[in-house]
Amino acid sequence: MFYHLFFQNLINLYQPFEVFGSIPFRAVYATATALVISLVLGPFMIRRLKQLRIGEHIQEEVEKAQQNDDDQSKAGTPTMGGILIIVAVLISIVFWAKLDQPFIYLMILTTLWFGGLGFLDDMCKISRKQSLGLRGWQKIVLQTVGAIAIAYYLYQWGPVEANDTASRTALHLPFFKNYKPNLNILFIPLATLVIVGTSNAVNLTDGMDGLAIGCTLFVAGTIGALGYLASHNVIAEHLNLFHLPIGGEVAAIFCAALVGAGLGFLWYNGHPAQLFMGDTGSLPLGATLGTCALLIKQEFLLIIAGGIFVAETLSVIIQVWSYRTFGKRVIKMSPLHYHFLLSGWKESKVVIRFWIVALILMLIALSTLRIG
View 1 (cartoon, rainbow, N blue to C red):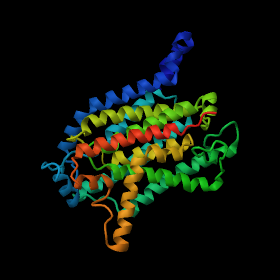
View 2: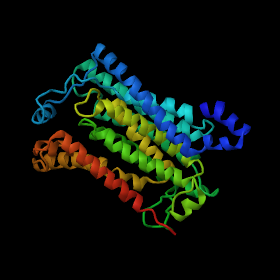
View 3: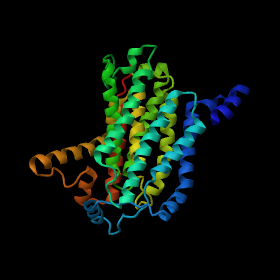
């Protein structure tokens, strides 16, 4: 809106003002806008949540694990801070994105659907005064409904490369420049799995101060950069990227706003946390990352860049399978970050080392781009 009302008129008035319409300029200010909004609104939200007594309820075994590291209990810390992230992202998008692009609205609707689901789950926890909200199957069903709707939209009206409709459902693989299998109708279950899987993966990672949001920043930065590169035909061709002219608009601007909002939230979520994101934040964060990756055809690079999320999810799956099959635990406690906490690491050490791994995985993902 801000772009259409202000910068577009300036650009038409005087040519040097074209810089105001460039993606890098608007991405930087989308980041700054979301950062400022989250920093300014953070204290107000923390006070308000405390007044409403909207605090985190923690599982007994999780609280014991945390108290091995810190005698101060985290129970009662204000939660549902994901509202802060969502508000900052959406306001920034309204200011800096070109709102004549349909995929921007797809990202907004994804944020609202999964954010609303997370809000419902958090409210159930608060009303029941326990750490469990919606039942597992209820959450999965609602996530799947939203993900199928997004997947079907991309299947029917998703971006195409060089007017080739088959590219809409093509699968781009790292290290394979010319092998792009067309999934056809199978694209829908794959896209659904990516969105639901990423949403739950971020949710499982959200167990320590700053852990989930810190790792999200690296993944969002990777997808945003890839989206910008994919918007340039020559660069996309050299790097074997799916050429999406509006990729920079959708992925770069949205992810830039997400990075800004995430940094602002991290200010209050860093150890010791004053605010937790709750499912209100973790579910839409994962879903939007998955949807962005699908838009720019980087589903596999999402797996590499988001390797921390993958490891956290696999640790839960393997732990549950092993316990139910053999009656034994593979690690001390799942998700994976609790295993290291129970192994004697301080929480801050676990978080920082996971961030370092996330950075390395981001660099590995970018290194798979093939030139020529």
